[in-house]
Length: 447
Ligand code: NAD
Image (cartoon, rainbow, N blue to C red; front, side, top):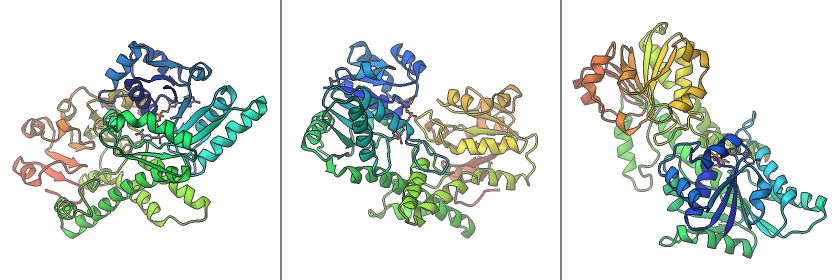
């Protein structure tokens, strides 16, 4: 098949590369000329395990092409994926201008029957909107071209995106015509040969499925963070509670880790968008509002513990931060708890020395340049280097090398043996034995 993917971010690039890997010819289009020029040279805009190899190999073989010109990319394609961003607007609703713009352009340049697939996460009713925009453009041109709009939400996880796309748990396809269902089945057949897991449903059902999935996962995290807060007050260790409840098969162990809040480009934005969707139809989303509020508070929890420990006196202190990405396996820092923590520390007069295995470049773009210039914020090349003469080590992202560190070296390097563990990675018994003071999330401090 000849496929065009519009938007070359986490979702678009992974979709394009994986579909090309299966033998299709794919055009990836983006409005960002630097991104496209770099991709042509084999330089990827994101870190994602395994992605560079399939991008470079498929590009070299001619199956994966990059362009900034949608008309060029549309010439031979029968299938168009829309994979542009749907960031939160000021009121929390999904900002649909990029999707609408792509729909307008598709309508302006479409010359042959096509299937237009919404892969972006979009509010219920977007497929109808996209159909109306394309139809209006075709009418304005005085041409008739047959097309269908399909909803095919993406469930990949950053950090495991290629693997998730290649071996999906399920493929959700909202389509209202047989031809579209058939083309989608053919396109995805190589990915599900041994595990046929395609779910066909209505277009609106598919659009809602994506929001409900992310909102459910965010709810599990916020619920556990609420339990953790209660555990701290009641002299309980949330880690034991987690193990105790996760063993119930109805609950399970996934997504019930207490921590310093969820971030990333999806959970925060999709929970906010679903709240806004609910308000638009006069529905009070009480659970979702609580999920969001708990998470906002949770992102400040490490800073609160630090402030309490130092009696509010952070001026001139230095903090070592391990982990900047919103989760391990990615360089994405969108809505990351590390950003909230670092902003709070520096605004309180402290200095930060941080290390992340891959997100160092993202971090340089995330914070004001003057913080780097005057030394308030340093991004260093190693986890132990970050600890030198710091008043405490704060673990924010649970990258593997942070899970079992050399505590003796850490203790030697820190000014004082204090750990704040935002992801409950450490065993309090061992921490005590090593002679550290310790704060976890939802457990009793060791002081
Ligand atoms: P992203 O910001 O990484 O990438 C979006 C890309 O679209 C950018 O490169 C941008 O330049 C490009 N773009 C914007 N307007 C364009 C236009 N008119 N023509 C061509 N390109 C254009 O976004 P992402 O993380 O890949 O997310 C895309 C969508 O997929 C969002 O709706 C998101 O919610 C959803 N999603 C994301 C993930 C994830 O883990 N990142 C997972 C599932 C679903």
